[in-house]
Length: 195
Image (cartoon, rainbow, N blue to C red; front, side, top):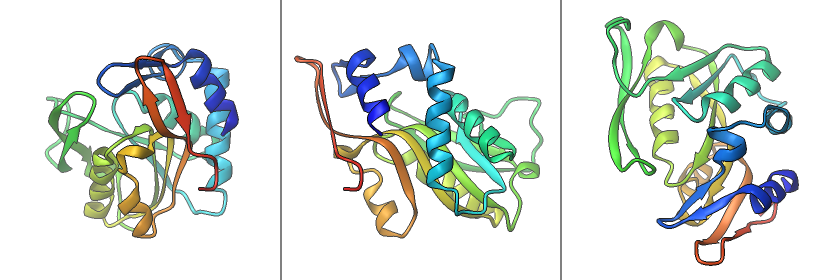
């Protein structure tokens, strides 16, 4: 999506450690009007899929997932990264390694919010190694639901996290697919749409 690629080139920052910062417009400070355009594009790419729920993982994916859920007119479920005292005991859970934070989280969803037979679209802001996406798929499968696809804002394609998922037949739609980044020059190269 050229609109997003242009915005990343203009306002994104490449930081040491293979980090692409889009926090000035996607996930810390949010340009909601811009993000609404991203949500509309995700909606367009999955227009032929039956979607009963949107699923994301806390925290930075919630904003885009909320807008996508609004476009589909369905509920949004946000998987938690820790169990709090106000959650019931009936939960689906799995372990997910965080590339960004370098730790492992027990990700969970209350069983009341994912049901057998539901068609679930997973939404996230970033996809690197694909661990969060695999964990969310696991939660939907535990519930007996069907993952109809995954909508991603930025995919670090060179880290190949989506390769096996696409090869398995899952529709993974990334609005911007990063081919390479250079922290010294601040440059970001993208894989063209359709490749």
